[in-house]
Image (cartoon, rainbow, N blue to C red; front, side, top):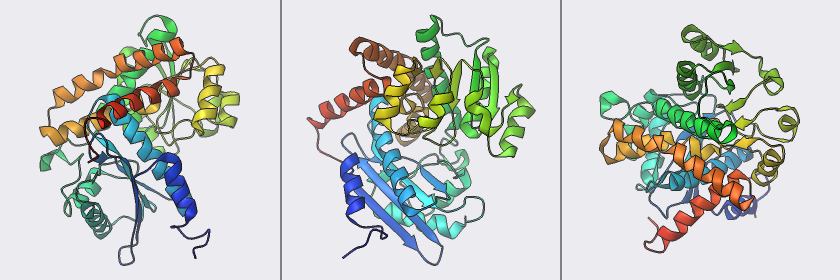
Length: 363
């Protein structure tokens, strides 16, 4: 009999049932210190692709909940983006600043390889191109590989471009014009995606504020662009037109929504709604226009998809640009059916999965 403290208990199976996952793999290796979870949500459209995140989770339960939510989001992301991939994700439990080693990532690569292509990994929070290079030493089922090894490199610039296009679609819906000139944008998270988003916003003349817990990221942005730095605890009190969360998820919750005052929410982080049904509806009632995260941050997976096809950067950027039209379609569906934008996006994703599922079997 298992106990509530063990990983593989009925609680885990219940969570899989709730999110309708196909498979969850728990990985450990004492010699390297590897503790990881790979979650495969749905492979109706193709093999499950999703990055690996390395994070110092407070508990194994927190890591499990994160990987289940993230992998489900990848299914919906690929579906709405119109690409033939399913949804998956992996998390490595550990401090990305001190716990990394070549052996750890190569051991993780072996676990990925053991799935026979059902899951394809890539870069995510806490993972660098060098780490991906080490994973690739043990498996071909990896994308986002450095350019000098024949891959497409860091997908962050393409992810940021998609967020930018989604933000412009939201601005057109809210203000009648897609121009971001003079708009006050709060970019929360100045990492890879946040940096490239600031770059695009600067070119258009937006008034930019940034916030990050990691000082080097702040310094990098300030070295290249003009932006006001906002203390982490003051983000939700900031005067803004657009809130762009680009760090970790669940920043739209009971506490923050009491403080947040903006017209638009459009950012690059995943799972921004702490509880999708509750906080998605709360955002709608507050009169804020929410650009669903997995819709507008899908540039990264589009970029990885094109790497699998034989990389063509122009094609990847061209498909990412269509995020503007997809986001607009979701806003219109939300308005016409009087439903929150997250639900409009989910319906769009589910309709495609259901339709394609009728003409093919799972991967």
